[in-house]
Length: 180
Figure 1 (cartoon, rainbow, N blue to C red):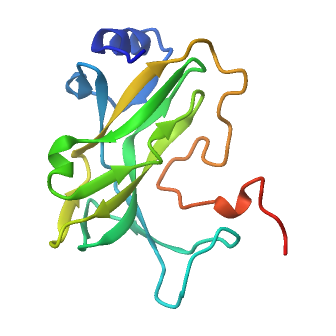
Figure 2 (tube, helix red, strand yellow):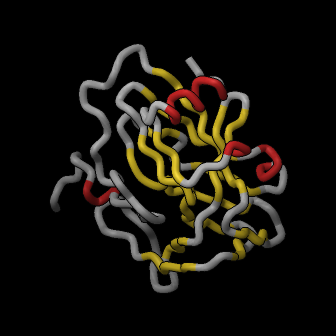
């Protein structure tokens, strides 16, 4: 079940759902708008021939209130909002239609698990032929909250729990990784 604006407000008021900072204008009929933070990561690819699942990825950290994403480029960003989901809610991260129509694709693997806490790292891709200028504080994505049939027995406490800024991939720490 997707939560309505009335239910989102109620959960926030009862402190079951935490979103900070938050203005009333961010709450939409069936979602909550998140704004762009000022912390970004670019993959350091100057001397790389490839990326793989077994080795850490090097990133260049950028802290700025404005950033340019060149055409056909990838960038990690973060939301301003720190969220804490209760064990009975999950959330989809969706790009805003107005931004998608500019050719900016926004994702975070599309899903936030029950029990997650932290800022949300966003994967941004400029599919346009022109650079796109982004400014922190602008609405960038939306969270669509869904109620689970029951509380999670094992809420999220994974690699990205309590992240406070953009976080790169930690795929090399996955449980199925084998040493060679």
